[in-house]
Image (cartoon, rainbow, N blue to C red; front, side, top):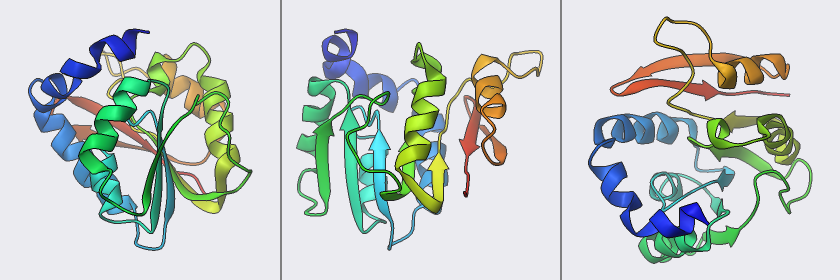
Length: 178
């Protein structure tokens, strides 16, 4: 699997090339998590947001499709007693309906063959009144038009889409209350 094969160099990319954007991303996401939140993080990778979320929430279930990405995240943040790391497929989440106060899926929707299915799953496991936080670097074309990812989110009929400019692109923070 591709993500298993790049897990060992992923942090170099995240901490080097995308450092400015990732710092801003962490700050914005941290501001959306509260101490009473039970949080699901999908596609946690090596834990870029996991560490930020873990410091602010009641509990965190951090998932990824890649076992090697999860192993790196667990090594970095496994000391937090309220954090669990689990292998899971964002298209078929093994959690009950309306289970989490906040659901985070950063920089993954644009990589999926079926983003509609992922959005349905993320929405399904989020509690009524909860927050869906779905940042991506790829929401607008260089001509300012909405790209495929933003279009999918908008057409899916979910709540408000808020755009925030980041140092290395634009990040969509999608938050919905049901």
